[in-house]
Length: 469
Ligand code: GLU
Image (cartoon, rainbow, N blue to C red; front, side, top):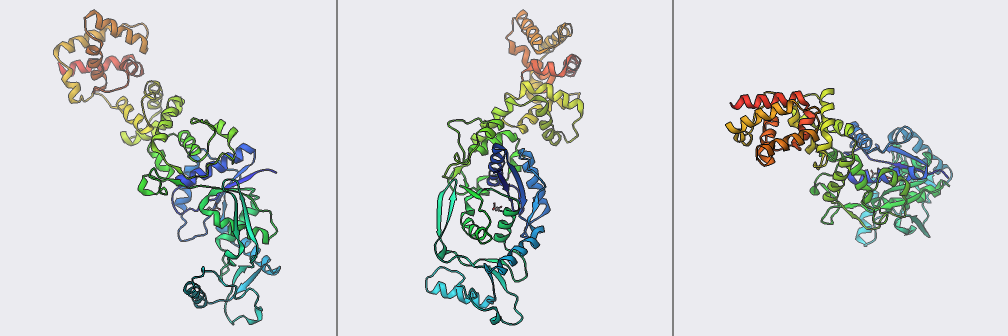
């Protein structure tokens, strides 16, 4: 059997973290088994579904690298097919028309409440002859669900979940206007898409029982289920806006790397021994449904941040430069050119060890792109005493003669220079930093000089000396 999984978001907002994790698990299971991972947009709620939300969800999925197979299925466009299945059930006696008026249904509900019974449709039209149908009333179509026995969901995470059929009433499949209900749409789509494994949040567990009844009514094979516990906030309550950002795209904007997010979401509810750092390849090799935890996972921003640190250090410099550039455009309020990109890439090795995220990297790298003549901040200005300016002038001349322009040679020269003047390294390096960057905080100054290149560095030293002389 080829495994087919699907992710079925309702496009009523951004992709929240729970959804991102559900998508990841479905994707991983398909990739692990060599199966297919499909995408279905559950856009049947026409009022709340928007194109913007669809785009935002696709964007976040792409960002996370969760590429889907085949074209996405749009549930709303399949309404005719859903109705066709309802009519088929009607034709073979597994569904029936129900003509109850809204008033009758309200009365039914109220009576149940008054008698302390659970509120359920009482089967009024289940066995009634359609010839008794009131004139001019369009019926809904209800499933003739089994009334005795039980429905068992053998769930990969929850174990066997058993629900007495007496607890489930005859659900509506088709509304009186002919539109399919969500429950019908999901089952028909899962069947038609050949879905073999449904992996989703455990808020859908009770739906699984009704859906199972519907699969069985059609004599379709029931997919395997894995209902994963929801994500909770650090305080143990269900994750909500109150806990901070709940949309995946917000984490991209905060400068997290997708691989850090992916690793984090994977560990949030799935485990492989004590492994914390799990690469994409390892995740594909190891992922299974048995490793999914039974209790709700708690979202922990510190853990995500420490994974981000790890993946930043590992990231390829050219790629990092491109990602940092996205944030840098906002800071500099201008386009990033190819020359800028080359400079950024050269700057990455000495910067990526220290930054927590891409935004911080962009902020720390911004000084590379400030145009000359530099403005010097107060601390930098304070360093520029007449003695220091003399020193810088001399240092500049020495640096101009260096045979090679790389960080190690620059450092060796500056150290020797400081020693020959019987000064601590800081007494030379700090004014040098001030002269070249306009501030007193930067990546290691020898790396900065190497990144700027000889010519630019020397011009900066000269301009600083001139500015304060
Ligand atoms: N559209 C549903 C949701 O966003 C998912 C339904 C399903 O996975 O069966 O919660």
